[in-house]
Length: 143
Image (cartoon, rainbow, N blue to C red; front, side, top):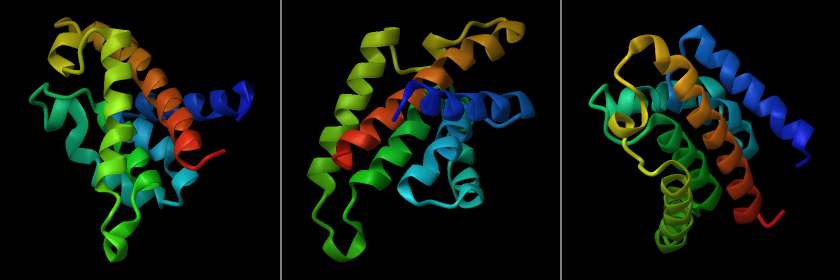
């Protein structure tokens, strides 16, 4: 995928965030077409992951959204039910990369307490989540 194409996904995710989507929704919805998923279904599915899982400031929503689409890319589905190990390996790489870049995966650690700073701060994690998800999807799918 070219940098210009990747930027289109990033721009879409940031526009969603400006409209009020949570971080998980921004990452997962903007990238879900790459793994054959419906945007509205993904929007609904990851809604509870925002705010660090329901506002508890646990795992960063941008990372959670990326994990969702990478899992879809890696999984062989219910019939085969034999891809858990490979999916965990991909997700482990994703989480390690995120932690290395930002020092934590916890929403509580990553975003400041000042509400006026959350939007621009979270935008950085959303950009990274989209880029990391797209890169990993390409790796998983062997592109």
